Length: 167
Image 1 (cartoon, rainbow, N blue to C red):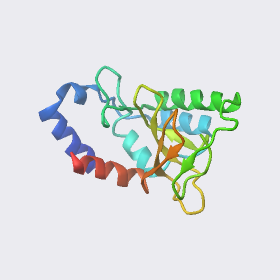
Image 2: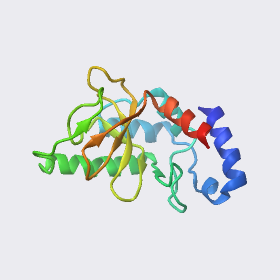
Image 3: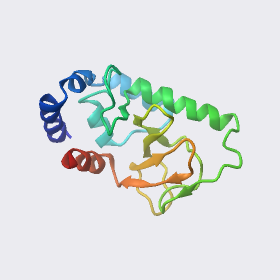
Image 4: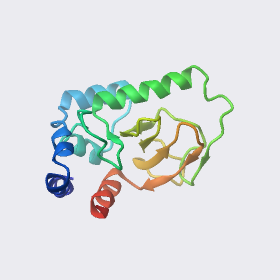
């Protein structure tokens, strides 16, 4: 994870120093433990390693990942609570999703942990409870107004490496 961050930071230094300055310092063990406690699940080691380098963005620049905000532990929890409230309130009753293989056929699951936010209710999520063909920690899309759920990578490390390499 450190190698990919070093590569990304070097690119940002040359192309977007304001975005580089918007990256937050590392998450503390207490911040990560608090997030996991509220979620009632452990985060994948590769994602924890990422948070221990940068705990998201401060929010003073455009989004890091294709203009989507890289969420900090507190912002992850904020976005997750919005979705959890909608689920608990019955907002997804009767909503149908069309997931790719390996993703549960629900509109939203509490085991889908958002780590990006595009400002319009859409996220990339860590899927911590995939269906039988999926892999715990796979990266999936979550659209607030569209039932398509697509797998982007088998793990956060795979997704992040691909993202940095394509830049």
